[in-house]
Length: 59
Image 1 (cartoon, rainbow, N blue to C red):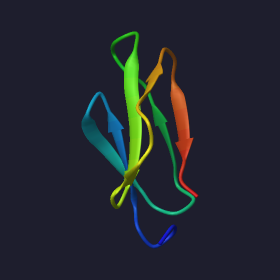
Image 2: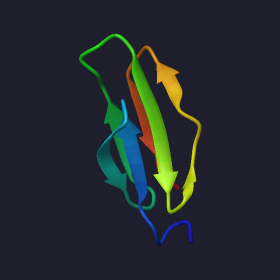
Image 3: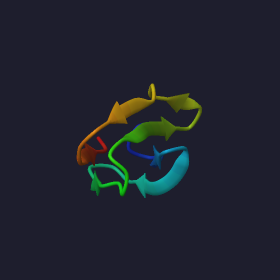
Image 4: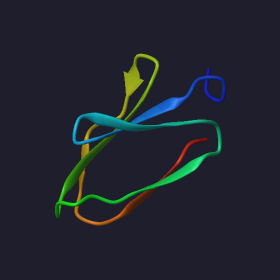
């Protein structure tokens, strides 16, 4: 399943990017804090609160 399906990246509950295998994406937010979450199929990460720019890598 891993590399065949994209990872949906959500920032503040809005999908901002669908990452393919080994793709990188840097998140920056206008506000001081951002809530970041990643989903693949029915599986998802816990929502994390970030205060700085975040770089995500899909593997």
